[in-house]
Image (cartoon, helix red, strand yellow):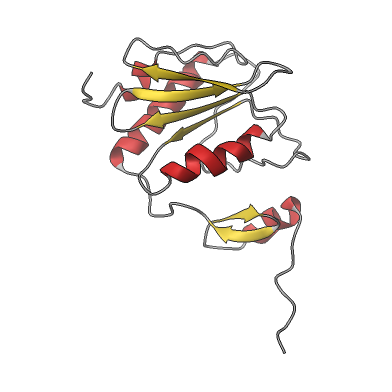
Length: 171
């Protein structure tokens, strides 16, 4: 006779559980699941994220919002008390489909999120998903060094080229 299945937990219980764990997990339907793409980022991936943090951190200085890294948990639950406004992800071969579909849908459900940027590490290009206050989600392709990332919800519009500044990328 099989024992009872795994116990579903609240987001708060999940984060308490994670405090004494070495492995990284994420809550999926109330159950802990191994994080996707736990092999570590490539150098290009890492440089793009660091440049994004530097660029946005500089532009947001003195404003009421802050920049956080991937090590900061983003609660996508409707009950969340945190109010993220924008999320940036760098696509990778192992998670490209998840990032573009499943992960994006999780973010779209978050009531405070207004922008989700998916950055291509292979070329100077990204897709920006945005939702105006009280409106529907839309998207725009950003291609080339002159493209601007319009994060209107936080009042900044950095150039896409800033995310690739320390990389040798073809135009």
